[in-house]
Length: 254
Ligand code: ADP
Ligand code: MG
Image (cartoon, rainbow, N blue to C red):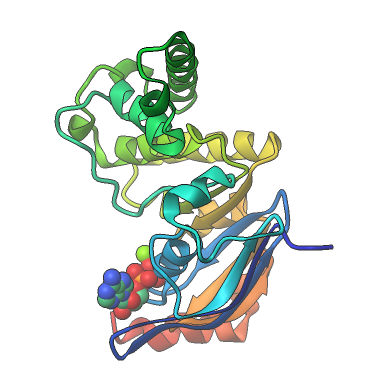
């Protein structure tokens, strides 16, 4: 069977720093893949390459049979792949609701091209309904009229997920969704991600928290200094020599 996301021989260097080298990852529809690795191992860079924010030096990425590694980020979103960022930054003057609405505009460009027409108003109403629904799903209804910049770090992560979901993706890549998030909120994020997966969403999650990984992920892929060193079930991580080496080997450097 063809992989839903098929990453082949991806390489990326910044100056003399070889950050990714011959990275191969295949992901099947419906999986929840944890992307693990020590700090600086290339996890965010790999997400940036997949989603078109960083051009790779070599290699190919196919998503649902379509080659996407030459596409711009906004075109990749339109193929059904969305992402969140490790450190979401929010505009100071927009409310939480406005940020969610702006995400729909950014993803589809609909209001821009149809501006002022009845079709635009219908589309905008649909986007507003969708934003309200997603803000509710991710527990942001009580703060929907506050400035987005006033949210806590954890709430900004939730809003990042809302923005990604406004694109109605089939695959969602999350960069450290629970880092720095209060444990109560972490439980809510876990529940929200499991609901999404039950509805058919394929997830790739960069995560450090082992409890989260064991609870949520169906498979783990481990990066170490730009190489994939393991692909296994979460319960096999602790006994995997190359995984232990990756973490122990970097312990002195961080
Ligand atoms: P991780 O997410 O696993 O912590 P990153 O992918 O953020 O790691 O970074 C991997 C390496 O790539 C680090 O050495 C980092 O300094 C370097 N790097 C990432 N992005 C850039 C960039 N835009 N310019 C130069 N170096 C970068
Ligand atoms: Mg990172």
